[in-house]
Length: 383
Image 1 (cartoon, one colour):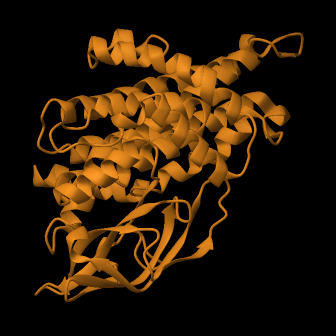
Image 2 (image 1 turned 90 degrees about the horizontal axis):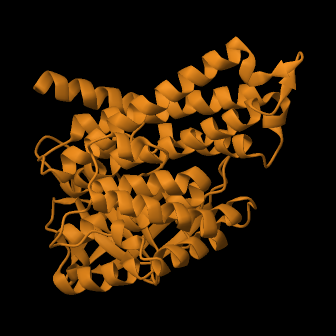
């Protein structure tokens, strides 16, 4: 983790020890696999197994009796994203897909799925987004209607990470309509094997990622698999975002730190006009901007994580600031790394080329940059 973890006051000795052990694990297990872009489904399953065997998934999967260590979550995401965005996704999806379950599912449902997710025996997914409901959660059209001892779910979910390889989905659906016309959302844990659930399509993105569209057609889910009570869905979804949003910034920092390292390495070896790139002032300016952006991003990310771990009731503004700045900064840093590499950076399979494709999604998922600005301003005006 270079010197950042030693120079800042956000971390305990346990976090520093975790960062050290993570470095070795990533070098041994993740970096060699990240070089070859294989089938995203197969690689994700492989990463889940690796992360489980190393005991890493327990930092993503919450338990009802112990709050999630958000600083550890961020440290792990930064370390994994430094080498592989797919390994980072495999890690964090186990958390996103189980957080609501940990908070509100019946004990036997909670214990079954949390145990399997932590052990890497079941892959999780978080099914919120729909074809007509991305940033606008209130536009959700998927319905869940009570029928005896079950709820019947109908509708489609789109851009769902792990669609097609997940063993279970935390699904958000409309169970009623409030007096103001907004939907009353409820959450359900739905096994991938349950009749009525099907994969409509697997979606190809610019960077390899297991993602797709799910259809629910008369999907009967036992009432005991509701997470929380009717109407708790929106709150549970927002709580999940509040915890995990800063960690998106941490993943961005990992990618940005790798880009900076690659740029420093290349600039220190490549000669142009009779001297090293690193000796040209315009390249030095780029490097200065890159490291300053990175330091600022990491400070915002770990401030938000520290506040959450310290018992702050809400870190909505701080988490949104962290995600907004870190993901935007990472885009700038990786773009500058590409510029320093010149044509070499455009080569398919080079590290900076891979980073250039991988980083773009971070400014969109879990709330676009534009949505983060609305959240920040709303919190500022409320305060």
